[in-house]
Length: 235
Length: 305
Image 1 (cartoon, rainbow over the protein chains, first blue to last red):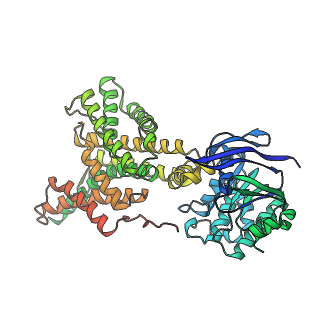
Image 2 (image 1 turned 60 degrees about the horizontal axis):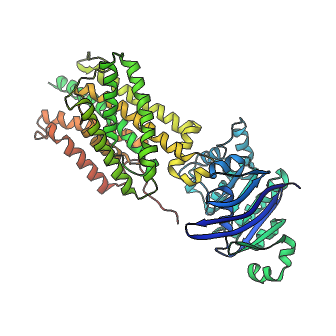
Image 3 (image 1 turned 90 degrees about the vertical axis):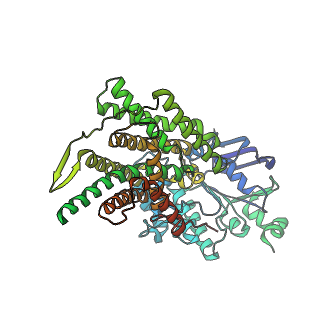
């Protein structure tokens, strides 16, 4: 497997507060990689550094090319970032959200892709005109995923998708992510509080502690690791 | 008597729609900027006056014919709006709303001063594109200028609707306005979109200014000041974030003010005179804010928890 994303000693700060102290990680083509850690460990900041929504130093390579600039540039390079807390335009309709997902695309298959995306989310079929703000939390999270898919991303970044959702909805969400990964080879970097579900769908994982990578390995190894079990799996 | 008063009534309706059309255009400009930048642009009226002066200069001093001059004015106004955003608004955009408001008030004063310095305060005549002829339609005398104004206003509203509703650019403009951070994540260049919004608003203002100058037969530095108050009233009546509300609010306000004039001629509200038009508009602003703050077409603000 070839390396799709490579972070080399990334540091990031919010004003005077340094959130990342040299995080290095890699994601291979077609992989699902999880980032675990406690609140404030730098999980969200890691994703924000990749999509350019926080100022950073160090190098980030996507397909061997250095990523520079803000989120507009990251989006054009093929990164789809689904931020924490339902990344949808609540005032716009379901269809408009999907069309915006394809904003950086110049090809003519956007309509066909909207149909294809809707196949993963059957409830969307006759609700294209509904405002996203009136959807349920789970539906909004699905819409955010659908919108990310509309960009035909090289890399999907998911930030705490399980936050505030019912367990059944979370399971359905990750089932779709896994299906996309298996059938379309979608590469995913997912940040999750829920370590159990994150380790169950990922092949590898990194554990962050106060802005540094404390531990990394295959998801299977991490599940068996005494510390991970006690700190993040809770048994 | 009845027939005569009906014709008079219709005349007032037509005049009201024409004036309301101008209010609607300027109100739309206010709404576009409020949606994207989050403030009322107090300089919107002066920007429109400046545009009208540019048209006047091209026609009178440089001998251009009307339509090329109008087209050039729209283009110059668009670029001017983009520049105002880039040079003056953007540096303070991240600060508090009050800072931006103060800057727009500064722009108002600055542009007004520039106009007086450049063209003096002497009223000038800017011709209209539709001439001064009138038509008699079944006893209702309507001016070509009023009909033209109504058609231009409706045409522009239709074009804007098509732009925002059906084009990718329009969708990006809306996305950048309602949720800039998300918009960046999907690749929308938000700064460009906000600048484009200012350009669009300045262009709408230019049309409003060019339509106002001939109607009053007086292009002077304060020409748009009352129109801006009416546009405020229209935008607030319709809902400050609702484009359709701005249009309906403008037309309703125009007709309403002319209805008051009409009724006062027939003994009802006979105390009403032209001087009370502005206070009436202010009353509408106050009334709307008290009774229905979100306006006729606005949605009450709902915060996500």
